[in-house]
Image 1: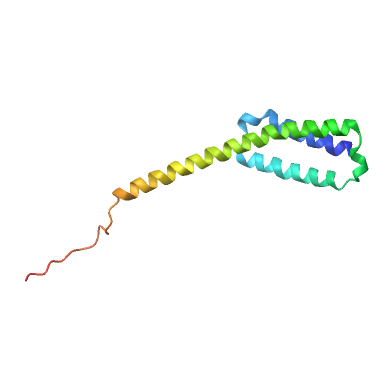
Image 2: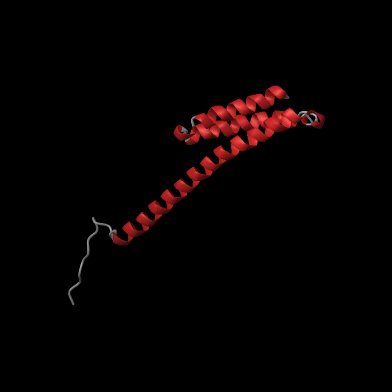
Length: 111
């Protein structure tokens, strides 16, 4: 149990130390690795959580993870804003696009 918590804290601290240069893919890897460790921890018997040291380690992990989750939310908001800008630009551009096929012909009939 202690080893799993320590691995989780080391994983989060390592990821947190490179937070400014993290890519979305690296954050995804962190989430996957973290999920695996948390799943293993949850398989432990409930009595193993009663240690004060384990509680402090788990609280530390939660505080560190909150920083990374905040960064992930920032990235999500940036991506959302960028998509909104692209959508707005596309809408504005389509208003000026030609509504006909440039290779088509128009024939008048004489009356």
